[in-house]
Image (cartoon, rainbow, N blue to C red; front, top):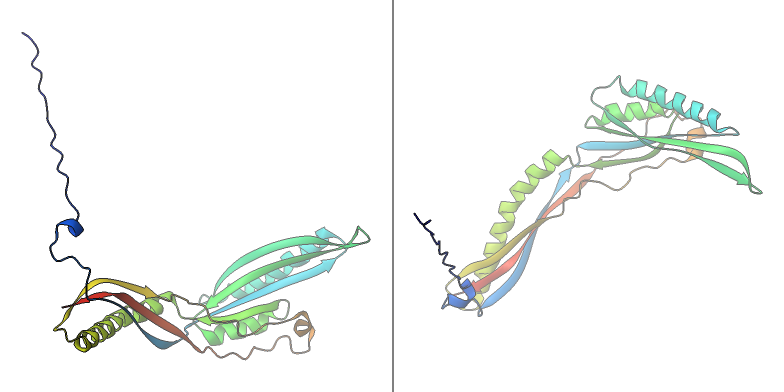
Length: 231
């Protein structure tokens, strides 16, 4: 028996784009517009960065001093479960004099984060006994930011539609359809640095004092832009 050859024929159907087949193409009475809504939200997260720095003739001694101070600082932080900590940026580098190494400088940073402002402020005051404060800043937590942002999106869309209706009326049109719409947010959690500490501050008599801070607010903004066709 001869083998039976079965031929499958695949039909390719080429679809025309909507632009080519639609009789009412969107090429007239188009209006682009943009609206935004924003709100001030109280910051609920405090961030701080502390640093330990030492200078010595020997790199090994510098490392010992830094490690001892940071180990002490971490022990203080671990007493408080409401504070998150992370060590950062450990570095040791030489200082030269006439192309010869005269000393070594070592530095290590640690970031701190908490929603308990009073607790973190007290902790920073304690840590200044052996560490410097690099900066303190405030922000809106991601959870609170998203909740606020989600509420603003609905408001922003309503404002967009209200403006579109106003434009349609000004053009003596009965209404409009939304051709496209883009929703954008500013998603900026961080506040500017609220305080900096210098080497001189660390050497001052009140190094164990608590820093005076004000959390402030942050702006949450939602922008809606798009294009409508009046009808």
